[in-house]
Structure formats: C-alpha cells, structure tokens
Amino acid sequence: INLEKKFSWQEAEAAYRKAAFFAPFYEDPYKALGGLYRKKAGLTISREKKAEFYGLAIQALNRAVELEPQGSGRIHFVLADLYRTRKMPSEAFAHYEKAMALEPMNALFVFEYAQFALEQGEVRKAIQLFERYQMIPFKEGTSNNPCKLLRTLSAHTRNPFDFKRVIALDQEEDRFCLAKVFGEQGQWDQAAKEFNILMKKTEASRGHDKGYMKSMAESVANFYSSHDRLKEALDYYEEALKQDPNNPIYQQEISNLNSKLQPPMEQTAEHAVV
Image (cartoon, rainbow, N blue to C red; front, side, top):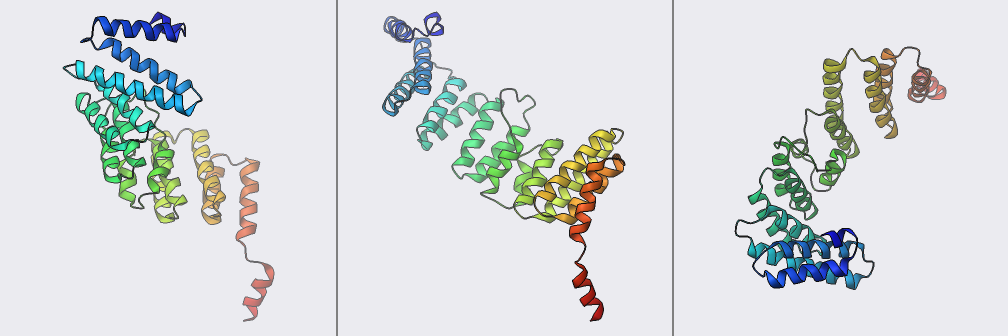
C-alpha cells in the first residue's frame, strides 16, 4: 500500500501478487490488486491498455468476492461500476443488486444504481430506487443534483407524479428544480403550481427575510423571462419589487415587460374603429 501511495505501481503490483501467491485464500491482496488496476485504467490514455486494466480489475475483484464468505457490498459496488464503464449492463445490474442487498441503507449504492437504471431506460426501477434513496437519512458521499436528475428523467416521462417521487419536496432546491423542469417540458400549469407552492412555503418559513424573498421571486421571474413567459415574469418581478420597492433593476424590468405586453398603438386604433 505504501508503494502504491508513492506511485511505485509496478512494485506495488508485484507485492500484491506475491501476497496473493502466499495467501491464495485471503481476499485482501485481490481487493488491492483490483483497486490498483482500476486506478491505472482511469489514468491511461490508450484504449487497449484501459480495457486491459479494467479486465484485470474485474478479474481480481471477482476473485475477492469468491473468497469473502459474508460478501462485501463495497466490492460488488465497484464491480458494478466497472461493468457499467465497460458497457456490460447485465453484469452491472447484478452487482448493484448484490451491493444493495448487503448494504441496503448505503445512500451512494442506491443513488448510483438508480442513476444507472435511468441511463438504461429502466424508468420504473429508477423511480423506485430514487424513492428509496429519499428515505435514507444520511446521504454523505452522494452528488445529488435535483435539476440534472429531473432533466434526465424528463427524457422518459411526462407524468408529474413520477417527477415528484424522485426528489425531496420539502427541500426548496428540489421544488424549484421541479417547477423549472415542468416549464422546460412545456407543462406551464404544473410549473406555475409548483412555483406558487414554493413561494408560499418560503414565505411561511422565511417571510421575515425580505432579502431572501426578493431573491426567490427574482429567480422565478428570470426563469419565466428566459422562456418568454412575459406575464408570469411581470408578476414575479412585481413580487420582488414589493420586497425591495426602490430597486432600479426591478423597476426597469417591470417597465420593459409592460411595454412588451401592451398592444401596439396601431392595433389599438384599428380595434377601436371596428
């Protein structure tokens, strides 16, 4: 291990192989070999070498699994990741299942498995896993990006209930992302509903913080404006202005939007004549 830390990888590999030779029924040398080959695969540029090192990593870790009677969720998880990288979905699914069976409350295992299932178009499976993920109290080590997750899911479904099942609706960021993705899908009624809920919840919890309230309203207004939803943008800029009445940016945005929403004078005159 010390040799590996010093990047003396040839010597480290020789040491691990020697340990495996003298203790062939002990799993740790195979774990170490698998980890070393995985690192080498990640750093090499050559496709051939990369494939070779991934293959060696899989071989070593499979041997470690055989030698560990109780099983190791971590080894199965790493094997799933390796098979996923090598585009071998059947094997990846099998090892994700084994990893979760051994460590059902490991948030990282559940989250990555859910992401993989979604990548493979297994939408129902992915949603079930994301629901399970939301019930795990401690999620350290995961890189959950609710907007990215919802956008990925949006390629497979338009059902609002599906989106709500995979995020934490009590979190402002998740609710904000949900509303944005509904809008990006063209489901503007759903977007309006979620933005309205978000603003009410924010007011209930942080209504005393005018700075936060105006920032939230401004964010929603900017989103609507970027999608040419001018009336909705105007409503939220006006809400932001209530929190900061002398803000010149909000005043200018409101003036610009009113100008765009007002019918041209010629059209107004024609309608008057008719």
